[in-house]
Image (cartoon, rainbow, N blue to C red):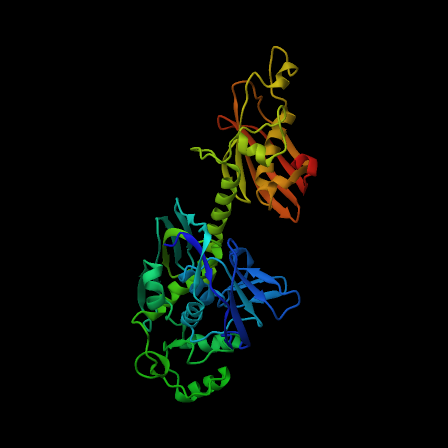
Length: 470
């Protein structure tokens, strides 16, 4: 795998019709600077809105993957993204003067060929690989879909499909080396569907640009020729269609014996580009589809964002510690004697955080609370939970070192057991609701697995004054 970031050497374009919208579009690939990522730009809209190709921006997965921000959308991006990732391109601008890229022949090969004509440029910055160091799993019981990422110092994908349909049966395939296999073994694999799906898709307003030149139609039932003619007219296909005798409409020849599952792998490769970083992992997928692919990409992207944040603030890796005191001081504005979190031992970005406070007799508040019988004030236990929650909240916003958390409301505070010198507080704080810059959290503090305090918080995120930032 390449170690340096990569872009293309010059601008290249292609034109054509979109598969689902049936609209014509000119798509231009352009070089991009280091750490730019993959971004689509709608040049036909005012202001030329950019849509970064990340899972957060997915707005629809009904038959392909659609990304968008506000009114600006781009349909069916998965084949384009597969070509970009398959060629190990990190930074690229994709300009479109329409809502959907041209479908070409239904595979990623047309995009690959155009990008190869542009040539590639190695950039100075190293690739920002997401190295999977723990098993990540997605499971959908109803549709029997499983996608798993396992630790591996390479990028490999294995896919199995089983539609329980005799027209297709069970198929599997694997990609083990992007550089050697992608262009010849997977990029040419075309999109496919069952004949029984065609009419349904047309009724849903999809495949307006579909024809027998950009899709493989698998015959899974046998309508009459009259019914086929009516279907052809309904979907706007001018060529005469017939059932054929090889299981593919019009006897179209497949490019590979297992072309459908190879295309499923191609779709998965494109959808996983929405993680926003190249990855090193073994991906195993059973019966994947766009919805499942995107949900899995969101899971992995969340891990990627969390790892980036940890690197940003935690300079020295420590076993069992997400953020030590030094890292916490880079995030929170609190200082002695009011910094009441010693370390963060668990962080589930946007969901939950666990902080630890070791309570010693040296705490300044014990001088007056109470002489001869030191007890940690309940309000300070609440404050310690609030500071822990502040770490969770600030890491949910860009540039957390430039933000402050102001607690607006505390509800249902309960103190169940005293906290004394020698105790170690474990503070579990969960995000329960988020609206713009106002959030709700629930906090619980434990000593030796015994609940000692709990409360609900409402907090607001505001910009930190410059003098505090400096």
